[in-house]
Image (cartoon, rainbow, N blue to C red; front, side, top):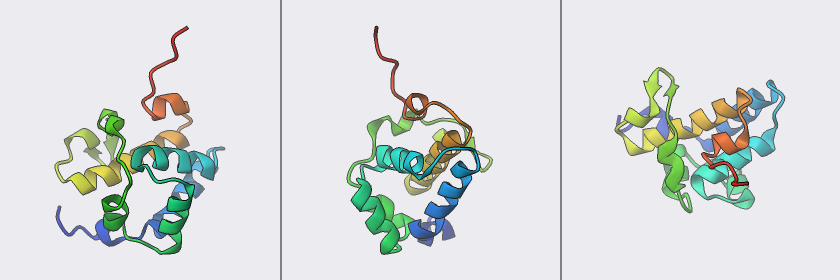
Length: 121
């Protein structure tokens, strides 16, 4: 999928769509920020800078401080494709982010979304 038009889409253009999507379901922008920072390693300032500078998705992921090693645990279908079977690494990262936001909107618990094992005890 090299050169797919989504790669040149700005993070700033999709971020508010993510926020709107989760707000319709009773969640908020902080939840979107939490899953995106978990996935990419960006902090709040880094996310804000990505929005403010309108960096494209290819650059957003290329400059991600640290992709979460547990991202490979993200499975399921998004846009008709199983995320774990997507071969293009950039497209897979984008779809991982989409999948996490979808899970927030569906009301899943954050520990489940962030692939966190339950606390012992």
